Image (tube, rainbow, N blue to C red; front, side, top):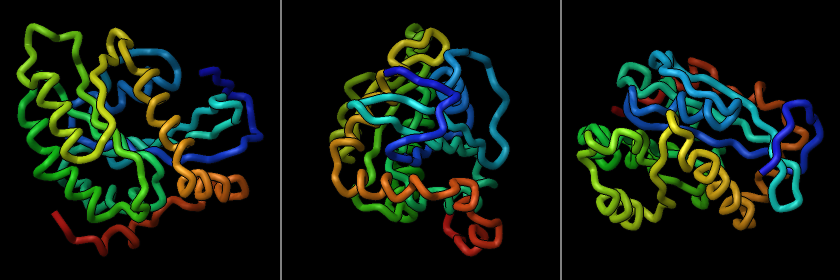
Length: 209
């Protein structure tokens, strides 16, 4: 998967959303994928946004990736960002059981509630496999939950870069293989992604959770 930050023309625009509890490593995974770097980052405030251009399947793709805060106080803000997403990455920390439990108790419910695209591809990601000695969530548990929810599944480590590129690549290939999502992505060519950013007044109407 080749990338070029200088590219401006593209065949498809895909919106990806990263969700999960605070501290599971969403921002670190995104940094690793977009600039091949690792940092222990402080928790995201509200929503962060990054763009990456990639070549896959003979197509030039523009990925608009939204990295959401995991803290509950930002939940009504981030709910608006589910709209129009072709891919959603649900991240948990394999060393913290509660981050896995909250996938079913919080995050999967939010996807069902706020996602506007019925064919949206979801991927479950168990992060921090470099801390194998501290693992409390088994790979089988992750696979079973992903199967139950109809999600793609992988485990990775932002710190060691294990499976990070593959995680995003598998998600993107699945989107490319889904005609309705491809149609949505082609509409994005003439869009200004920043104009699609939800307003705060928009999101404040979502009172759930």
